[in-house]
Length: 271
Ligand SMILES: C[S@@+](CC[C@H](N)C(=O)[O-])C[C@H]1O[C@@H](n2cnc3c(N)ncnc32)[C@H](O)[C@@H]1O
Image (cartoon, rainbow, N blue to C red; front, side, top):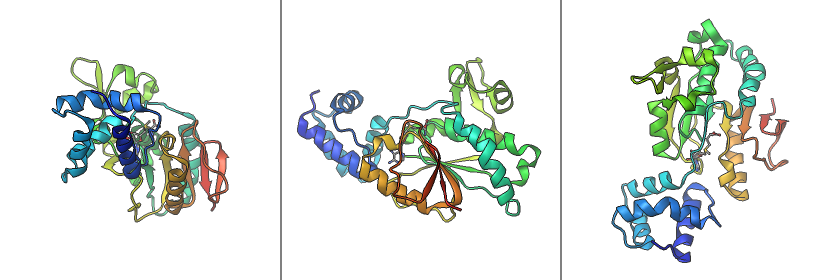
């Protein structure tokens, strides 16, 4: 099914205005990801399809569109340097700072299929050890893709997907499923992560300030102005001294916010 330039523009505008995602110059990718589903749903053209997406008050068609067009690529141990930094620098500081309240606020804002928040939860359990049960270290994990979140909640991964995790973590935090080729995240880890659908373009509803925010490998899909607006909101919900992790190939526009650059992809709000 051929996508006209007008149809492509309409999809681009929709995606960008609602989700910040900029897919300009990616017509091939957009039509490639949509074509099968649009055809199978019985539409004769992308115009017909988009009419339905925009008219559907239940939001179902829009969710499907986002599920098809968002890029959910992620994996365990991605940019592990961040988790090392968390263990060596951030958590020792938080253990002291929050010694009385024993309550941490950690948010993964583009959690995709769950590898990032689950690793964070594993690291927290590892770090606090026997003390962990005295702390509330639940990780909030959000994404726009309901398909990705469904996989995340299920917490089931193939042998290949878990391969890179340290052996001790595999033994402690993963349970083999019947057949032995897939593994489930242990319940005690799953209980540490709260998954929710949330669009980063929406106003942030958080009542508490965040000690740690992961926004890794998502801003690459946004344009300059969208990133700038998002960063203002992020800054406002950061606890003084709190940390922000972005993808290692991403950059933050320096000088906009009084964030200290600790490493090229690790930022800290002034104390
Ligand atoms: C490439 S994945 C990154 C996953 C993980 N953070 C990592 O670094 O491996 C990007 C994720 O951002 C999500 N995303 C894109 N736009 C978003 C938005 N406006 N609000 C929330 N999530 C969004 C996508 O659905 C996708 O799951």
